[in-house]
Every structure is written in C-alpha cells, then in structure tokens.
Image (cartoon, rainbow, N blue to C red; front, side, top):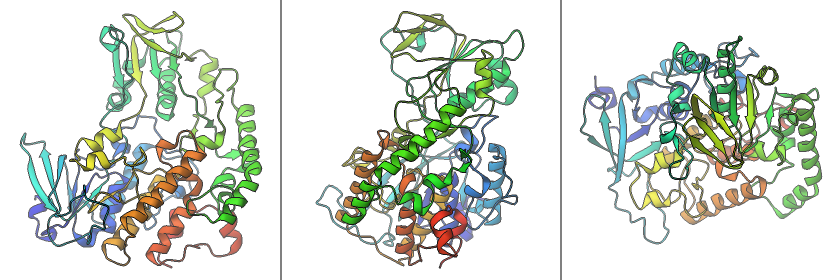
Amino acid sequence: MDPLQNPTVMNPRIAILGTGVSGLATAKQLSHYNPIVFEASDSIGGVWKHCSYNSTKLQSLRCDYEFSDFPWPDRDNSSFPSHAQILDYLHAYATHFDLIKFIRFNSKVVEVRFVGNQKPTDNLADYGSLLPGQPVWEVAVRTHESESVQWHSFEFLVICIGKYGDIPKIPSFPHDKGPEIFHGQVLHTIDYSKLDHEAATELLKGKKVVIVGYKKSGIDLAMECAEANQGPEGQTCTMIVRTLHWTVPHYWVWGLPFFLFYSTRSSQLLHEKPNQTFLRACLCFLLSPLRWAISKFIESYLVWKLPLKKYGLKPDHPFEEDYASCQMAIMPENFFSEADKGRIAFKRPNKWWFWEGGIEFDAGNRLEADVVIFATGYDGKKKLKSIMPEPFRSLIEFPSGIMPLYRATIHPLIPNMAFLGYVESVANLHSADLQSKWLAHLLDEKFNLPSVEDMLEQTTKEIQMMKRTTRFYKRHCISVFSINHDDEICRDMGWNPLRKKNWLAEAFSPYTSQDYEKEE
C-alpha cells in the first residue's frame, strides 16, 4: 500500500529524503510525526548498499558505530564488520523500530519547491514556526513505474541524501586527452561497486589496471585488484597518487590506544573550539607544542610501521590535519606486502592525461592500461544543488564557501529544512543519532533556535576554526571538537553534558553513542 494512502500515516507533515544511517535515525526520532521517507532505490542503507565493494569494511569497532538505543548483538567483537554485516544491522534497526512503513522505495526526489510565505532575499530575520500548519515545501517525486512526477506538500523537510554516491567526481582533461580517446575501459568506483564478486574479479584479473586516487576507496580497490591478479599471469595495479594522506595500520600507537590522543575530553582540551573564552584560547596557545608533539609521536610510529618513505607515500603535512578533516584511513593488513610483490605500484605525477593505450604523464612517460578506475570521490554539493530551488541553491555555501549548518543540522538561511549527514566526525552514525534527537526536540518545541544572525555567527566561528586547524577544512569535519559539539547539543536539549559515571572516565575514556542512550 502507498504510504501516503496508509491510514497510519495520514496527513504527513514531515518528509525525509534518504534511508542511509542519517535518514533511518531521523525517521526513528520523528516517528511520532508519521513522516514520509523517500528512497530512490529499492533498499535502505545509503552508501553501505550502493557504494561498497565486496571487501569494504567499517573502519572502527562495532561499539563505536551503533545507535544509542540499538546496540550490536555482538558489540564486543573486535573485528571490523563487513558492509554486508552493517546492512544487516541497519535492517534490524529499521525492523525493530517499525520504520519500513514510513518508507517509499523507488521514489527519487528530483526537485523541491518553496511555497512558504517568507522572502529569503529580504534582510535576515527569524523564519518563525518550524511546523506552521501549512505547506512550506513541495517535493517532486519520480517512481520507477512512471516517467512523470508527483508533487507532495510538507511543512518540514529533512535532507539525508549525503555527500557520497550518485554523482561521481571526474577530473577534467585537456581537449583530446580525456577518457574518450582511450581504447580500454574507464569507470568510477560507483560503477565498480555495482558489480558482484564474479564480475569484479573478471574486470580486474589479468588486466593492467590503473586506479586514480589514494583515499580509502582507492586503497581497498587496489587490494581487490592485487588479490585478483595472484599467480604468474597476474598484472600490476598502478595507483596514481596526487594528494597524500596519512594511513594507520590499526588503532594502537607505540602500544597506546589511539583514542587517548584525540577522542577524550582531556585530549580535546588541547584543541581550539568555537566560542571559547580568552583564557581558553591562551591555554590552547600554550599547549600547542604538546599538540604538535602528539602529531609527531603518531607520525613516527606510522613511518616506522609502514614503508611510507620507501614508496614515496609519506605526507608533508602533519597527521593532525588529516584527523581534523576526517581523512585518516585504516590501511588493509597486506597492502604493502602486495606492493613488495609488485602487485601494487605507485605513480606521483603533477599532471597526467589519457592516450589511446593508457595513461601519459607530464614527464613524457607512458603507462599502458586495460582498465582505468576513478577513485576520486563524489560531488555531493552538485547532488544537493540539483534538487534545490533558487535562491536557496545559491545560499547553500553562503557566506563562507562551506554549507553553514548550525549544530550540524540547520542552515540559518533555509527555512523549515534540516540537513543530516553533511558534517563529518569520528563516528558519523553517532553524530547522526544525536543530531536526530536534537532535531526531534527542536520540532517538539522543547527549545527554540537562536536568531538567524546568531546562528550564522556560530557557524562562521566553527568554519574559521577549521580553517586554522587543517588545509582540508572544506570536508567540514568536527573530529577535534566533537565532544564539545555534543555538549552543546545536550545543553540545548536540557541534558547534562557530562555523561560518564566518574571524573576519571570523564577525562580519559572515549565517548560513544551509548553515553547518550537516555536523557540525564
């Protein structure tokens, strides 16, 4: 039965776009509003369903990636769960809280239209009630069964379509030097992720494969390529590396657990945070040598543990900058063993382009290739802008060039709309879980938003602080002040931000979703 005609979901006032972890968390927290959840595909899971390889695994422990009210059944298992296990967990969550009844599968939102009374081009002013009792947004939905679109009206929209998937980011090339002249096969990781294990192996086995990119998706793909090319007939997989990032073999550094360095209250005292006092700013300045020393301490271990210098893969920037931009990746256990065997090679060109037989570099060298795979990420902003109307499309990144999201959720200049999954942290599921609770409290009118000017001032402070912390600030990551961010959310909701049982745990143990299970 169509959920819009289901008696249990009559007169929906709220629409949620997407059923990744953010969409599911939001649907659960707003279930008392009987929301409609539009999902473009036939399944929940977001990137875990549509952008994962056969070998894709979570990069953290189960206990660090779970909903506060739905722990993993084997949460103390120290192995990293596969993407299939994560999908099972998300399906169990949706089933346990009866969320499927809210979801319209195979329903792609192609456009949203503002029909409210406000004039967003006027001077900054408060937008009034978030649930005004009349439509503010109209949503155009195209189903798989129809080429035409249907329009639905809502008082509030929650955008959970995320920054990844759907629209691949492809490098630009000079005229007549792009993929169109290459005689081999060119694809993006989003295309590769749609292949089953047999088809993926067939694509890679015995082929000269070039992977463009050196982030987690490219590293995992290189490992799959190496595994498919074992034996005397195997070919080398070559990675084109433009920007280096630090990778870690596991979550221990010189025998110490990694969380001690960045994920406790005591460790985050070393880092700047928004709205800090003058004395707090002075303390951060005085402690900056210790912050530098911690970064160097971690780097020394990584250079000792991994052959980064041997393969020219040691970044020039501090480790802290990658952590502060959520770009730290776990290196697969046998990655450099395969490199030592010649199954994985690396190229570090300044510029490169295609020729008929493969890849040509700015030094004049050529590399033959049968398959070229772009592991170059996704254009999440373009995906979001494709459905947004003007003037809001132009406001998405105004005024700083990054989407200003108050409490990582509300854009001060876009009325009756929330965004979840656009600000990254150490554990994105934890962030989505807590932010969805904050949004539910907000819509239930348990607290009020500040003025638009005050929200813009707060988001500007956060973005300026991130610019001072890492050159990769445009990823919009709050990892080095995540506990402070959660504290502010708790205060808004009227919760005690101190969630541990004693001061020792408060200072030196990491925070997880379980700390925010219940109101305190």
